[in-house]
Image (cartoon, rainbow, N blue to C red; front, side, top):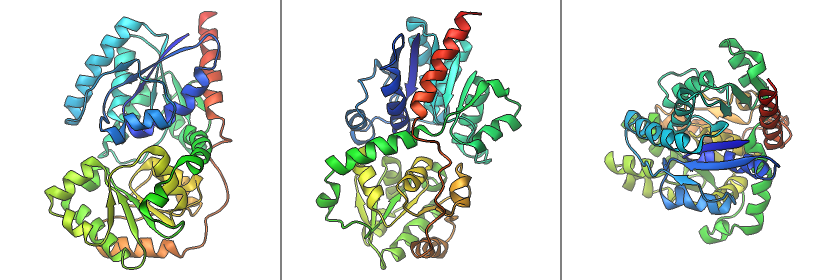
Length: 368
Protein backbone atom coordinates (compact mmCIF):
# COMPACT_ATOMS: atom_id res chain seq x y z
CA UNK A 1 0.00 0.00 0.00
CA UNK A 2 1.42 3.37 -1.05
CA UNK A 3 0.39 6.38 1.04
CA UNK A 4 1.12 10.07 0.55
CA UNK A 5 0.82 12.33 3.60
CA UNK A 6 0.36 16.07 3.10
CA UNK A 7 1.75 18.46 5.74
CA UNK A 8 2.63 22.13 5.80
CA UNK A 9 2.37 23.64 9.29
CA UNK A 10 3.76 23.00 12.76
CA UNK A 11 0.69 21.22 14.21
CA UNK A 12 0.66 18.87 11.24
CA UNK A 13 4.31 17.94 11.72
CA UNK A 14 3.50 16.85 15.27
CA UNK A 15 0.49 14.77 14.21
CA UNK A 16 2.34 13.26 11.26
CA UNK A 17 5.24 12.25 13.51
CA UNK A 18 2.97 10.11 15.69
CA UNK A 19 1.38 8.36 12.70
CA UNK A 20 4.43 8.13 10.46
CA UNK A 21 6.44 6.39 13.17
CA UNK A 22 3.88 3.58 13.13
CA UNK A 23 3.22 3.46 9.38
CA UNK A 24 6.89 3.16 8.48
CA UNK A 25 7.21 0.20 10.82
CA UNK A 26 4.21 -1.57 9.24
CA UNK A 27 5.11 -4.27 6.68
CA UNK A 28 3.62 -3.70 3.26
CA UNK A 29 3.18 0.06 3.76
CA UNK A 30 5.13 2.71 1.86
CA UNK A 31 4.60 6.25 3.12
CA UNK A 32 5.76 9.34 1.27
CA UNK A 33 5.72 12.81 2.79
CA UNK A 34 4.82 15.99 0.89
CA UNK A 35 5.62 19.29 2.62
CA UNK A 36 3.77 22.19 1.03
CA UNK A 37 6.05 24.79 2.59
CA UNK A 38 3.17 26.63 4.26
CA UNK A 39 5.50 27.16 7.23
CA UNK A 40 8.94 27.78 5.79
CA UNK A 41 10.84 29.61 8.57
CA UNK A 42 13.68 27.56 10.08
CA UNK A 43 12.11 27.59 13.54
CA UNK A 44 8.66 26.93 12.06
CA UNK A 45 9.59 23.95 9.91
CA UNK A 46 13.04 22.39 9.48
CA UNK A 47 13.86 22.22 13.18
CA UNK A 48 10.57 20.40 13.75
CA UNK A 49 11.53 17.63 11.33
CA UNK A 50 14.82 17.14 13.15
CA UNK A 51 13.39 17.11 16.65
CA UNK A 52 10.34 15.01 15.79
CA UNK A 53 12.54 12.47 14.01
CA UNK A 54 10.45 12.73 10.85
CA UNK A 55 12.24 11.63 7.65
CA UNK A 56 13.04 14.39 5.21
CA UNK A 57 10.04 15.11 2.97
CA UNK A 58 10.02 13.27 -0.33
CA UNK A 59 8.68 16.49 -1.88
CA UNK A 60 9.07 20.04 -0.56
CA UNK A 61 6.80 22.26 -2.65
CA UNK A 62 8.05 25.57 -1.22
CA UNK A 63 4.70 27.33 -1.61
CA UNK A 64 5.22 29.90 1.17
CA UNK A 65 2.75 32.55 2.27
CA UNK A 66 0.01 34.40 0.41
CA UNK A 67 -3.70 35.03 0.47
CA UNK A 68 -5.90 32.03 1.22
CA UNK A 69 -7.03 31.68 -2.39
CA UNK A 70 -3.60 32.14 -3.95
CA UNK A 71 -1.85 29.88 -1.45
CA UNK A 72 -4.43 27.11 -1.71
CA UNK A 73 -4.45 27.35 -5.51
CA UNK A 74 -0.68 27.01 -5.78
CA UNK A 75 -0.75 24.06 -3.39
CA UNK A 76 -3.53 22.38 -5.35
CA UNK A 77 -1.58 22.63 -8.60
CA UNK A 78 1.69 21.35 -7.10
CA UNK A 79 0.11 18.51 -5.11
CA UNK A 80 -1.78 17.35 -8.19
CA UNK A 81 1.51 17.03 -10.08
CA UNK A 82 2.93 14.84 -7.30
CA UNK A 83 -0.15 12.63 -7.23
CA UNK A 84 -0.09 12.21 -11.02
CA UNK A 85 3.53 11.08 -10.76
CA UNK A 86 3.36 8.84 -7.69
CA UNK A 87 -0.15 7.35 -8.08
CA UNK A 88 -0.70 6.56 -4.38
CA UNK A 89 -3.40 4.24 -3.08
CA UNK A 90 -4.46 6.90 -0.58
CA UNK A 91 -3.74 10.44 0.55
CA UNK A 92 -3.60 11.34 4.25
CA UNK A 93 -4.30 14.89 5.41
CA UNK A 94 -4.10 16.36 8.91
CA UNK A 95 -6.00 19.06 10.73
CA UNK A 96 -7.49 22.19 9.17
CA UNK A 97 -4.92 24.28 7.28
CA UNK A 98 -4.84 25.34 3.64
CA UNK A 99 -2.46 22.42 3.08
CA UNK A 100 -5.16 20.09 4.41
CA UNK A 101 -7.82 21.38 2.05
CA UNK A 102 -5.52 21.51 -0.97
CA UNK A 103 -4.37 17.93 -0.38
CA UNK A 104 -7.93 16.65 -0.03
CA UNK A 105 -9.19 18.49 -3.12
CA UNK A 106 -6.27 17.42 -5.30
CA UNK A 107 -6.77 13.78 -4.31
CA UNK A 108 -10.54 13.56 -4.57
CA UNK A 109 -10.57 15.19 -8.03
CA UNK A 110 -8.15 12.44 -9.15
CA UNK A 111 -10.40 9.79 -7.54
CA UNK A 112 -7.78 8.95 -4.91
CA UNK A 113 -9.28 8.05 -1.50
CA UNK A 114 -8.62 10.54 1.31
CA UNK A 115 -8.13 9.88 5.02
CA UNK A 116 -8.60 12.89 7.31
CA UNK A 117 -6.87 12.70 10.68
CA UNK A 118 -8.44 14.95 13.32
CA UNK A 119 -11.84 14.92 11.61
CA UNK A 120 -15.08 16.29 13.05
CA UNK A 121 -13.79 19.32 14.92
CA UNK A 122 -16.17 22.25 14.80
CA UNK A 123 -15.99 25.78 16.19
CA UNK A 124 -19.27 26.65 14.40
CA UNK A 125 -17.69 29.93 13.32
CA UNK A 126 -17.75 30.07 9.53
CA UNK A 127 -15.62 33.24 9.56
CA UNK A 128 -12.64 31.13 10.60
CA UNK A 129 -10.70 29.85 7.56
CA UNK A 130 -9.87 26.73 9.56
CA UNK A 131 -13.56 25.93 10.01
CA UNK A 132 -14.19 26.09 6.27
CA UNK A 133 -11.12 23.93 5.61
CA UNK A 134 -12.12 21.23 8.09
CA UNK A 135 -15.75 21.00 6.95
CA UNK A 136 -14.85 20.74 3.25
CA UNK A 137 -12.09 18.23 3.98
CA UNK A 138 -14.39 16.02 6.07
CA UNK A 139 -16.98 15.89 3.32
CA UNK A 140 -14.30 15.08 0.73
CA UNK A 141 -12.83 12.18 2.72
CA UNK A 142 -13.88 8.54 2.76
CA UNK A 143 -12.04 7.71 6.00
CA UNK A 144 -12.50 10.13 8.91
CA UNK A 145 -10.46 9.65 12.08
CA UNK A 146 -12.22 11.45 14.93
CA UNK A 147 -10.20 12.30 18.05
CA UNK A 148 -13.17 12.50 20.45
CA UNK A 149 -16.75 11.37 20.85
CA UNK A 150 -17.88 14.97 20.33
CA UNK A 151 -16.10 15.08 16.96
CA UNK A 152 -17.71 11.80 15.94
CA UNK A 153 -21.17 13.11 16.81
CA UNK A 154 -20.53 16.29 14.80
CA UNK A 155 -19.84 14.19 11.72
CA UNK A 156 -22.94 12.04 12.20
CA UNK A 157 -25.11 15.15 12.53
CA UNK A 158 -23.77 16.36 9.18
CA UNK A 159 -24.94 13.17 7.51
CA UNK A 160 -21.59 11.42 7.08
CA UNK A 161 -22.05 7.66 7.04
CA UNK A 162 -21.10 5.97 10.29
CA UNK A 163 -18.97 3.33 8.56
CA UNK A 164 -16.65 6.09 7.27
CA UNK A 165 -15.94 7.39 10.79
CA UNK A 166 -13.46 5.86 13.23
CA UNK A 167 -13.02 7.04 16.83
CA UNK A 168 -9.28 6.62 17.41
CA UNK A 169 -8.34 9.22 20.02
CA UNK A 170 -5.98 12.12 19.49
CA UNK A 171 -2.61 11.63 17.82
CA UNK A 172 -1.37 14.72 19.65
CA UNK A 173 -1.78 12.82 22.90
CA UNK A 174 0.51 10.15 21.47
CA UNK A 175 3.01 12.90 20.69
CA UNK A 176 2.65 14.54 24.10
CA UNK A 177 3.51 11.31 25.88
CA UNK A 178 6.49 10.51 23.65
CA UNK A 179 8.00 13.96 23.21
CA UNK A 180 7.18 15.23 26.69
CA UNK A 181 9.69 12.78 28.09
CA UNK A 182 12.20 13.57 25.35
CA UNK A 183 11.92 17.30 26.09
CA UNK A 184 12.64 16.72 29.77
CA UNK A 185 15.80 14.86 28.79
CA UNK A 186 17.09 17.15 26.05
CA UNK A 187 15.69 20.70 26.30
CA UNK A 188 17.67 23.37 28.12
CA UNK A 189 15.30 26.23 27.32
CA UNK A 190 14.50 26.99 30.98
CA UNK A 191 18.17 27.42 31.80
CA UNK A 192 18.76 29.45 28.65
CA UNK A 193 15.91 31.84 29.45
CA UNK A 194 16.63 31.73 33.21
CA UNK A 195 13.11 30.61 34.04
CA UNK A 196 11.98 28.68 37.09
CA UNK A 197 9.25 26.03 36.76
CA UNK A 198 5.71 27.26 37.41
CA UNK A 199 6.86 30.88 37.65
CA UNK A 200 5.59 32.33 34.34
CA UNK A 201 2.67 32.66 31.95
CA UNK A 202 3.34 31.30 28.45
CA UNK A 203 1.59 33.06 25.54
CA UNK A 204 1.08 32.08 21.89
CA UNK A 205 -0.96 34.19 19.46
CA UNK A 206 -1.16 33.60 15.71
CA UNK A 207 -4.76 33.37 14.43
CA UNK A 208 -5.84 35.91 11.85
CA UNK A 209 -8.89 36.89 13.90
CA UNK A 210 -6.50 38.28 16.52
CA UNK A 211 -3.47 39.36 14.49
CA UNK A 212 -5.41 41.09 11.72
CA UNK A 213 -7.70 43.07 14.05
CA UNK A 214 -5.88 46.03 15.57
CA UNK A 215 -8.39 46.42 18.42
CA UNK A 216 -8.21 42.78 19.46
CA UNK A 217 -4.43 42.66 19.22
CA UNK A 218 -4.14 45.86 21.27
CA UNK A 219 -6.49 44.43 23.91
CA UNK A 220 -4.34 41.30 24.12
CA UNK A 221 -1.07 43.20 24.39
CA UNK A 222 -2.33 45.72 26.93
CA UNK A 223 -4.02 42.99 28.95
CA UNK A 224 -0.84 40.90 28.99
CA UNK A 225 1.14 43.97 30.08
CA UNK A 226 -1.07 44.24 33.15
CA UNK A 227 -0.70 40.53 33.85
CA UNK A 228 3.07 41.03 33.56
CA UNK A 229 2.96 43.23 36.66
CA UNK A 230 1.96 40.15 38.68
CA UNK A 231 3.79 37.28 36.95
CA UNK A 232 6.40 37.11 34.16
CA UNK A 233 4.90 36.65 30.67
CA UNK A 234 6.94 34.71 28.09
CA UNK A 235 5.77 35.24 24.52
CA UNK A 236 7.34 33.30 21.60
CA UNK A 237 6.26 35.54 18.72
CA UNK A 238 4.92 33.94 15.55
CA UNK A 239 6.20 35.65 12.36
CA UNK A 240 2.67 36.74 11.43
CA UNK A 241 2.16 38.18 14.90
CA UNK A 242 5.45 40.09 14.85
CA UNK A 243 4.49 41.71 11.54
CA UNK A 244 1.10 42.66 13.00
CA UNK A 245 2.69 44.13 16.14
CA UNK A 246 4.95 46.23 13.94
CA UNK A 247 2.09 47.24 11.64
CA UNK A 248 -0.10 48.44 14.49
CA UNK A 249 2.85 50.02 16.38
CA UNK A 250 2.43 47.63 19.29
CA UNK A 251 5.85 45.99 19.29
CA UNK A 252 7.48 48.50 21.61
CA UNK A 253 4.37 48.47 23.82
CA UNK A 254 4.71 44.70 24.17
CA UNK A 255 8.47 44.76 24.70
CA UNK A 256 8.11 47.20 27.59
CA UNK A 257 6.63 44.54 29.89
CA UNK A 258 6.54 41.16 28.13
CA UNK A 259 9.39 38.70 27.47
CA UNK A 260 9.24 38.48 23.67
CA UNK A 261 11.33 35.69 22.18
CA UNK A 262 11.68 34.19 18.70
CA UNK A 263 9.73 31.02 17.86
CA UNK A 264 11.30 27.98 19.50
CA UNK A 265 11.67 24.37 18.39
CA UNK A 266 9.14 21.76 19.35
CA UNK A 267 11.04 20.24 22.27
CA UNK A 268 11.72 23.68 23.75
CA UNK A 269 8.05 24.59 23.33
CA UNK A 270 6.96 21.40 25.04
CA UNK A 271 9.35 22.16 27.91
CA UNK A 272 7.97 25.69 28.23
CA UNK A 273 4.42 24.33 28.22
CA UNK A 274 5.10 21.67 30.83
CA UNK A 275 6.62 24.17 33.23
CA UNK A 276 4.29 27.13 32.72
CA UNK A 277 2.05 28.26 35.55
CA UNK A 278 -0.62 29.08 32.96
CA UNK A 279 -0.85 29.17 29.15
CA UNK A 280 -2.74 31.87 27.23
CA UNK A 281 -3.23 31.04 23.56
CA UNK A 282 -5.45 31.12 20.50
CA UNK A 283 -4.03 27.82 19.19
CA UNK A 284 -6.14 24.68 19.14
CA UNK A 285 -3.09 22.46 19.48
CA UNK A 286 -1.60 24.38 22.39
CA UNK A 287 -4.93 24.19 24.24
CA UNK A 288 -4.70 20.41 24.15
CA UNK A 289 -1.01 20.29 25.02
CA UNK A 290 -1.75 22.45 28.06
CA UNK A 291 -4.32 19.85 29.13
CA UNK A 292 -2.00 16.91 28.44
CA UNK A 293 0.57 18.49 30.75
CA UNK A 294 -2.14 19.56 33.24
CA UNK A 295 -1.46 23.28 32.92
CA UNK A 296 -4.42 25.72 33.19
CA UNK A 297 -5.23 27.42 29.88
CA UNK A 298 -6.95 30.63 28.82
CA UNK A 299 -8.06 30.64 25.18
CA UNK A 300 -8.22 34.15 23.74
CA UNK A 301 -11.14 33.47 21.41
CA UNK A 302 -14.94 33.40 21.52
CA UNK A 303 -15.10 29.67 20.79
CA UNK A 304 -13.00 26.52 20.78
CA UNK A 305 -13.04 23.22 18.93
CA UNK A 306 -12.19 21.50 22.20
CA UNK A 307 -15.31 22.12 24.30
CA UNK A 308 -14.54 19.16 26.53
CA UNK A 309 -11.57 21.09 27.96
CA UNK A 310 -13.88 23.92 28.98
CA UNK A 311 -16.37 21.46 30.47
CA UNK A 312 -13.60 19.77 32.46
CA UNK A 313 -12.43 23.12 33.85
CA UNK A 314 -8.94 23.12 32.32
CA UNK A 315 -9.68 25.78 29.72
CA UNK A 316 -11.40 29.16 29.97
CA UNK A 317 -12.64 31.11 26.96
CA UNK A 318 -11.89 34.84 27.09
CA UNK A 319 -12.96 37.19 24.30
CA UNK A 320 -10.05 39.62 23.71
CA UNK A 321 -12.21 42.67 23.14
CA UNK A 322 -11.07 44.74 26.12
CA UNK A 323 -7.76 44.63 28.03
CA UNK A 324 -9.66 44.38 31.33
CA UNK A 325 -11.31 41.14 30.21
CA UNK A 326 -7.98 39.61 29.28
CA UNK A 327 -6.49 40.57 32.65
CA UNK A 328 -9.45 39.27 34.62
CA UNK A 329 -9.61 36.01 32.70
CA UNK A 330 -5.93 35.21 33.16
CA UNK A 331 -5.60 36.29 36.79
CA UNK A 332 -8.76 34.41 37.79
CA UNK A 333 -7.48 31.27 36.09
CA UNK A 334 -4.13 31.55 37.84
CA UNK A 335 -5.85 30.99 41.18
CA UNK A 336 -8.74 28.74 40.09
CA UNK A 337 -9.03 25.13 41.31
CA UNK A 338 -7.58 22.40 39.10
CA UNK A 339 -9.84 20.88 36.48
CA UNK A 340 -11.45 17.46 36.57
CA UNK A 341 -9.09 14.52 36.04
CA UNK A 342 -10.57 12.85 32.96
CA UNK A 343 -9.08 12.17 29.53
CA UNK A 344 -11.39 12.23 26.50
CA UNK A 345 -8.50 11.81 24.02
CA UNK A 346 -7.84 8.08 24.13
CA UNK A 347 -5.02 5.97 25.50
CA UNK A 348 -2.04 7.34 23.60
CA UNK A 349 -2.22 4.65 20.90
CA UNK A 350 -4.02 6.59 18.17
CA UNK A 351 -1.22 6.07 15.65
CA UNK A 352 -1.50 2.30 15.99
CA UNK A 353 -5.30 2.39 15.61
CA UNK A 354 -5.06 4.57 12.51
CA UNK A 355 -2.44 2.33 10.90
CA UNK A 356 -4.51 -0.77 11.59
CA UNK A 357 -7.60 0.83 10.10
CA UNK A 358 -5.75 2.05 6.99
CA UNK A 359 -4.25 -1.37 6.37
CA UNK A 360 -7.46 -3.31 6.98
CA UNK A 361 -9.46 -0.93 4.82
CA UNK A 362 -7.00 -1.37 1.95
CA UNK A 363 -7.23 -5.16 2.29
CA UNK A 364 -11.02 -4.94 2.27
CA UNK A 365 -10.96 -2.79 -0.88
CA UNK A 366 -8.62 -5.20 -2.66
CA UNK A 367 -10.98 -8.09 -1.93
CA UNK A 368 -14.06 -6.37 -3.39
